[in-house]
Amino acid sequence: MRFPFALTKKIASHIIRHKLRKTPKFAMVLQLEPLHTCNLTCTGCGRIREYSTSLKDMVPLEQCLQAAIECDAPMVSVCGGEPLIYPKIEELINGLLDQGRVLYICTNGMFMRKKMRDYLAVVYSPKIEPKLKKLLDGKLISEKEAETIRKSDETARKKVVIRPTKWMYWNVHVDGLEFTHDLIVEREGVFKECIAAIKMAKIIGYQVATNTTVYKETDVQEIEDMFKYLSSLEVDGHTISPGYDYDAAKKDMVSRLGKDPKQFFLTRDMTRQKFAKIQEWGKAFTIFGTPVYQEFLAGKRELTCTAWAIPTFNVKGWKAPCYLMTDGHYGGYQEMLSKVQWEKYGVVNGVARDPRCEHCMVHCGYDPSGALGTNYQSGDNWKNIKYNFGAKPKPFPASLELVKRAYNGVTIGKGHLAEAKAIINSPAAGARGAFTRKEEDHQHQEAHVGSHCGTGDTSERDELLEKIKDAKKAEA
Ligand code: SF4
Ligand code: SF4
Image (cartoon, rainbow, N blue to C red; front, side, top):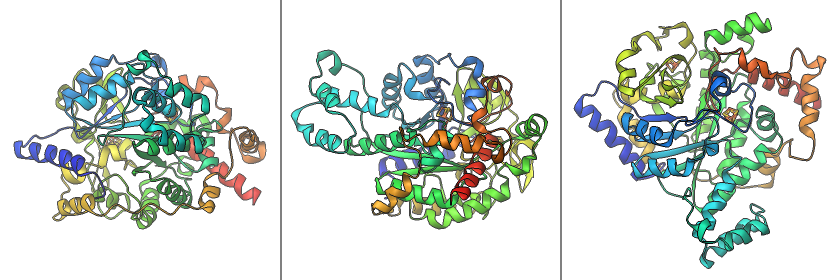
């Protein structure tokens, strides 16, 4: 099976239950943002901008758990900011698992190994020595860390930890191979750390997914190579979604930067072209997302937005209308459902009800639409069932060539990032470089929205990726 049976059953029963009750609108995935603080400052990240004035605020644990009970989504995506910074992350994860949710911890990967070492210290017995040996052989833990795990005392063993379970996935943000990813996250060694964390998680027995956003300048061939490499590491699945900007971001681009938005934004047509290619080779990988949504992305059908099915809860409340746009925050999920005029949003038969929705095809608006929206076509359910129950694609064979392609530039200590920064910030590379972004930009861009490690204002990233392309051409 492509996805674990228990998970598929839980989600299917949730839909069937609400269909039988004729519930008009209900939640499928809760995007839970317990905080917006992050250890990285990725180029173009919407969250650390939109919530720049509340970066130190956190949603109390009880309120997070209550939000999940309130909307009763079978799946919860714990995101942020960086959720592993949340002081009660272990309690939050365990509390949500106790509620019977399927969990995705959306992380930039930088603290994963620490969290997994905590887990190993709690469960240590001589029986796990073979795993420790594998981790040591792969240089995923140091001798000193192995000793700490072995010598864990009573206090360390009482720690609440994140344990491997079939109900949870680490969902690691990876936007490209080493060179591209480290440039986008603006720090050397992040790609390397993500890969180490993924390898460690697989040895211990966690489920691992990755999430990737496709931008205008994203090289689809690079993403295919990246999926091959991740598949060779036995990653369990991938989320892939188009980047998106809305109207205000375009206006900002014209007024502040004097640029033509068409140069940078992923329009519907561009999304369709890229995803038509991705759909061709995507069959070789376990892509999360219904086949109906994948057809929509590839331009083979229309869907209406069902943003109410993937609500976002954060320090300000229930964010409406969607993960991307903020027209308000509400005190309760039901209150948000009843007060928001949902018919004002989305694109119907190619016509945008709200100009800001014009080019949006993101998963948080459209992924559940095939099953919940008004575009049901006969055979859709069968298509989705067949996809879920279909054989899981085999891992791509590991090879040195693949590793070489993955580690294509910036590994910590080699100083390539400084070189790359110099290239893309040089006058020859064009105007203001992404790395020259100043802190005050964060304060003056309230209109910019986006997601943790995902969709959002793509202009800076697109600009950056374009420069990377130019730099690579110049190198060749
Ligand atoms: S179409 Fe996109 S931007 Fe518009 S409401 Fe739906 S998810 Fe949000
Ligand atoms: S994109 Fe994710 S990892 Fe990067 S700064 Fe934003 S929240 Fe942090």
